[in-house]
Length: 191
Image (cartoon, rainbow, N blue to C red; front, side, top):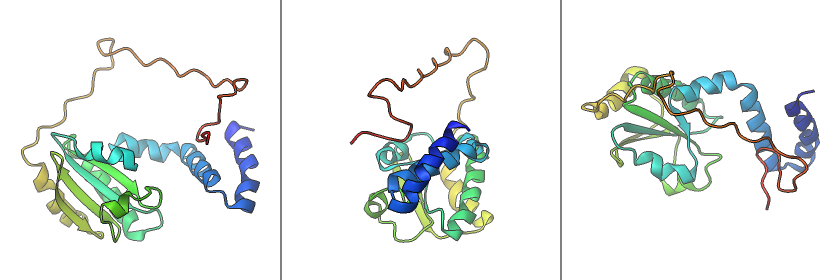
């Protein structure tokens, strides 16, 4: 059995009988890592999944239009709008970046931002909110709403070449040492 299956088998009784939220978060992470083919393509397209701690810095980016999509996995209009936003951001030559905030997992950030309905999309340029809309719309209307804010922005610089000219590759992370009492499985934390 693979490690994830062993962990899943160990956590399943806990989830079923106690309703443990931390266990559900771990299972969600395992499910996402198993389906990494679809999530890897989404992250390669420039989508950043935001948490409250990341939100302020992400919206303050200079030189690009920042879209922040407040969504939920269970929301039908959110599931329709998300791929359209990803497509527009991917086609923008780096002028438009997309951040997504799952309202079910973001703590009190949606309340602080005044989100009362989803999908709620905020448009930022140079750190200031310049537009906002709530609800889904077709691709043409979406382009008319977003693209004018990207006018005059230069295309993002090309990625660094793959040859030896770039920075050295990052060192691999050390393996977890189960004999150490500080070691915890991924996704777990000490209280």
